[in-house]
Structures are given as C-alpha cells and as structure tokens.
Amino acid sequence: MKPVLLSDLFKEFPIPWATDVAPGAIPISAIYYDSRMVRRGALFVAISGGSVDGHEYISSAISRGAVAVVGTREIRGLPVPYIRVADSREALAYLAAAFFDHPARQLTVIGVTGTDGKTTTANMIYEILKQAGVKAGLISTVNAVIGDEVVDTGFHVTTPEAVEVQGYLSRMLAAGLTTVVLETTSHGLAQHRVTACEYDIAVVTNITHEHLDYHGTYEEYRAAKGRMFASLAQTVEKPLGNPRLAILNRDDISYDYLAGLVKGRQVTYGLQHKTDYFAQDVTSNPSGVDFTLIAEGLVERVHCNLPGKFNVSNCLAAFAAARAAGVETGAAIKGLSRLQGVPGRMEAIEMGQPYSAIVDFAHTPNALKVALETAREMTTKRVIAVFGSAGLRDRQKRRLMAEVSVQLADISIFTAEDPRTESLESILAEMADAATLAGGVEGKTFYRVADRGTAIRLGAELAAPGDLLIACGKGHEQSMCFGTIEYPWDDRTAMRATLAEQLGLPGYEMPHLPTS
Image 1 (cartoon, rainbow, N blue to C red):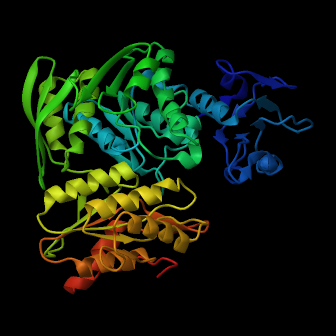
Image 2 (cartoon, rainbow, N blue to C red):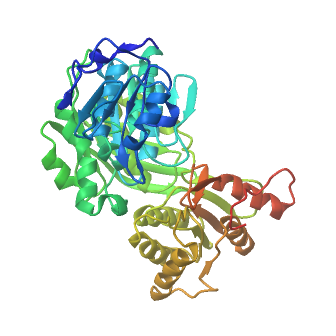
Image 3 (cartoon, rainbow, N blue to C red):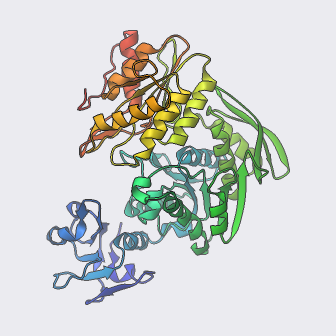
C-alpha cells in the first residue's frame, strides 16, 4: 500500500487533538500500536491499558523508525511530531480508517453482537449472502473470509484490533466485495476496535451474563453492546444506500433498553412474542432444527442443519439481516438450509465410537444451558459434560455454570479452561462447592480433573453406547493460557485423540498442557 501523508490522516479526524508541530507532509507507511512491530516510516500510537503502557516504549518505537507518535500524555522534546489525544484507542480507529481511505464507506456493513450465538448468526448471514450471489466477506472471532482467502483472526475470541479490522475491510473492497458481516464483541466496542466501521445493519442475539470482570456490571456490559446500535445514526451516506436498521431480539431482556436507544428504523424477531420475524412449531433432532417462519406475509417451513432450538432465534436474526441487505425471501431461506456447520459450535466428532461426541464453544451460563438442553434432545441416554471456567474473568460464572451442569447433565467433569495466573485448583474448588450445594455428588455426578485432556478421556471412559459426551468452552479456539503463556490446544484435536486411543486408531496425538 502507498504511504499516506500524516497531514491527510488528520484532515477528517473527528476528535480533539493537540500538537506543538502541525502534522505535515510526512509519508506514513503503516500504523502500529505495538512498538516491537514498528518499521521505518510508521506512525506509532501509544496505548495505555492492562499491564503495558505504550508511552513507555515511545523511544523504542522512534529508534525502530517511527516518524510520528500519537499518545495521551503531555510529552515534549521528541525528535518526531507528537500528537496528543484524549483516547489513544479511539484515535487509532479513526487513523486506521483514514490510512486505508475509509473502506467501510464503500461497503454495506452488517454488525452482529450478543453474548451467545453471534459467531453462528454471523456465519448464517454470510452463508445466505453468498448463496444469493452477494459479494460478501466475513470478519469473525474465528477468521476473516475475503473472497477465497481465509485468514485466522487470532487464538482467542475477540474482535481484531482497529488496524486489522480496517485492513480487512480495505482488502475486501479491493477484492470487489460489496458487503461485510462483522462479528462485534463488547470488548471490540468498548475498546474502539470497530469505531469508524460505519455500520448499516446492527443485529443483537442476546445480552446475558458475561464479561462482568471487564465491564463491572451488566448495565455497563449492555451499554457497550448498545454502542453499535447508537452508531447507526452516525453512519455516513453511502453509494450502496443507508439501511441504518436495528434488528432486535424481542424475547431477550436487552430489548427495552436497545429499542429505546435506537433512533431510527428497527425490526424485531422472536419465538415468544409476536414480532416482525416470528417462528412457531419448532422441532429439533440431531440433524438440525425445523420451524415455521412467519414474516412479511410469508408462512414457510424452514430447515436449518444446526441442532438446537436456540438456533431458531439465530436463524430469524440472520434472515432479517439478509432481507435488509436486499436478499430475496426464497434465496434467504435456501441460504439458511445450506449452512452445514460453524467451527466449534455443536461440532460432532465422529470416528466410529458407539456414543456421540461433540465440541461446543459454550462458555457462559446461558450458553451452557442451551448446549446441554440441545444435548438432551440428541440422545435418550446420558449426557456427560466436560468444561471449566476461565481465570481472571467473571468469577460468578464458575458457580452458575457448575449449577447448570449438575441440573442438566448426568455427569459433569470440571477441568482447566484458561486458568491464566489464577490457581486452577481454587477455580475447580469453587465449581465443586457450587455443584455440591446444587445437589451434586463428587465422584458420582461430578468430578474434578485438572488436565483437560485427561478430563475428556475420563468422559470417554464413562460413556456407554448411546450416551453423549460434550466438551464445552473452547470450541474453535487454538490455545489455552496457563500463567501468561498460550499453549497450543484444540478441543477437537483432543477429542479425536481420545477416541483414537479408545478405538485403537493410530496417528492421533493428544495436545500437551502443563497439567499433563
């Protein structure tokens, strides 16, 4: 990409800034927020947060070739222009958008947020658009899909940083795409990773108990999600039009708040209330879910290959978004039926074992509840659940998830799930205490097994023909954090290795963790 002049980056900069030296005709070759990545000709944005303060690395960035710096501190005497702002993350988003020439202004941007179901819903929308012939791209917490190219967006689940997001949008525009589905997390909204993305259609799945370790309260968490809907009013006029539409879940507790927040057009979907997009007569089995769709004068029987009644809500949200993006009704229904699965979401692992084995991303109390309810629909025998609760995250989840599993699964196996710098033994003890209070019996209805590979093996050993073994919490993720180190880990690989050991099949190896 050709360098952009520093002065041009600030031409439409919408937030206050100050400098002793006006940004001049200095060519900027790239924008970095990590000083270790800086190369000659770059703009370095110093971000404070977590355990690292980027301002401490300004000298290092300059020595590596940074020709200008943006930060929030009062700093003088640098050998390069220094621009001071109130919020470096917000500045980074606007600078990245300007650097890539505001690609979102030339695209229809569909944002999907929520606690549970956003990756599935984003993939549903993308699949419908693709099947309908729309030139669409996808940015999710799993990957970015740009034409025929699939890019890994990271080890753990969050929206990529603003520079990466704007870069993906730019590449999509260059590839001739017209529409992008952008999965949007609360962290992505709160940390301005998706600021300047110019949303046209905003979709919410649900807003339940999650990330209170970061946001503090449910209200703050909900407010972070709400930023996407409030931003619809600020979306610029686009050549492709301006739907500026909010798609809200009428059945969710977030509805009243979001409906009051949205100043423009909104439509609703649901199963419990009469809505613009409504479903009834829902049936579910291991091969998927069927329901009657009632919308826009249409009454149509719809099949989705993803099991679980909860996926009906995701289908409705995806259908509404596709229609808002201009997809014909018939093509939208056909697209829903074509989606074969989403990585790490109720993903069946089949190697000839006499019981069902599934990997799912459920890592919140609500998601675990619906995953186990779906598992119940898929077998008449026992459900064996393997899962943990992350360290340095919302501690309330440990108790709630243990209670949910004791109530809905026949056997629960509590294990490691990104303990980080917390004591894994203490995390498991909290879960065990909650399970006991909920009526569980250790050694009979629940177990504590620190090593996740060993926990999955125990689940397989306990599984009888017809049972269902489900490993929850990691889904598509490719690593697990112990201390501050990310160790390679994939539940699907671990499940296959376990089944291979049990069936005597060669060629499969269990990933190694510090607990092994």
